[in-house]
Length: 457
Image (cartoon, rainbow, N blue to C red; front, side, top):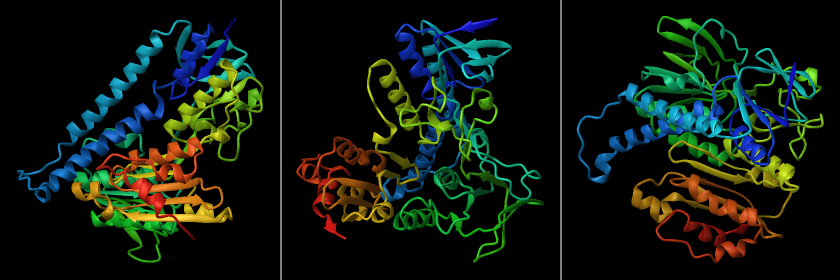
């Protein structure tokens, strides 16, 4: 027997629960299917626990620097079980909050189990068949494990398994020099581990401009993190001291010996066991579900939201996916993915806040540009906090006088970037931002100055 519903949502990550709330609020009978943990990556292995760990690492760093501020402290140590327990509490509290929300949602049935398509609008879960004219896939992603030599011979960590680590590794080797890897590199260095970052590319976080990459590398190396780029032949092997990581870089020793290794080489969508072929839903070469500008798949009545559609990969883009779908379905709107302006952050210390185009992307577009930069040494708030690493950069179109992109690598950069993000969303010329009157003393107060310093390039 098949149970008929108005809508089925597969996955209780960032987009699934709020969409369930909107659909049930519109009077629909909805099933939300979750095979593992409510809350998805953000709550269980991503933003919530990692930023909790980052906060502990920042506290450790400030304790280590206490004398710089005229503060005398005693011996400083890291109680890793307490650090891990603090992150675990944040996970459990956030997950319970989501579960309580869903439990009180009238018209919703929460099913625990693995969903698989039997036909375009029919799914099986726990031996039961469900069908609905509207199906929403919010199945998320997981850490990619590359097929590198020796991968099956050693124990390794991913961003998920490292969250619960109860010890500080003697030597943590991180394979992958991008966002996830660098956050863990700095936090574990501050916890007391020796840390080496191994990156196949010529520089860290290769999607950013070279000046950003170079500045971040300098920040990490100044804290004692070893960075090995151009690692063209990475392999893993057992070693009496732990794990030997072959790097074959153009400079330095050909291998690194670590007690632990973290794989941080990207993520892959959880789409390979959904029976998508049975529904005729198309995926790309990376396994992402192909969607249009409204997040519809090639099969009418099936949408894909969040990490599984390859259109963002962040908690905030997953949430915005929900907003787009809900507004179009329930509010008669015509919201599109192409209309959103992407911003994101790298949560090292100091953080990197980014929005819009990089300088390289703007140049490649052939636009006449205006550029401006300012070191954080000339930002009063940063000087007062004795956190002057990094710089600010703004890129604008000389003809339209609209902001194309910006980067703030510096204290408060993840918050200050929103002033620029909001201006870009408002589609207002740079002159409006230049004559805003910001609050002193803040990092954001330098944004109008940054605009005033824009020059042709």
